[in-house]
Length: 52
Image 1 (tube, one colour):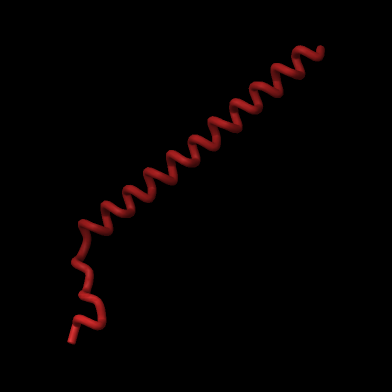
Image 2: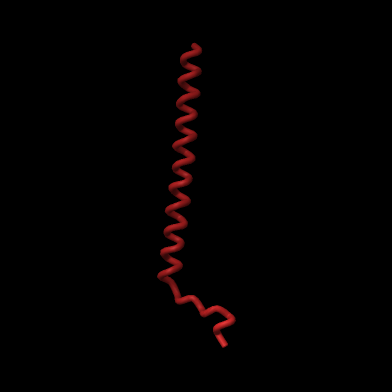
């Protein structure tokens, strides 16, 4: 019985690590996609102190 509990704890730990890695991957992809669309979108206006 103790082995089963240990095994379940190990599986839970691995699942938590994979979940964390998945979240990190989604965050990286989202930030990359947002940066790509931002750079290809409309041109940014010049800074206010140079607009004059």
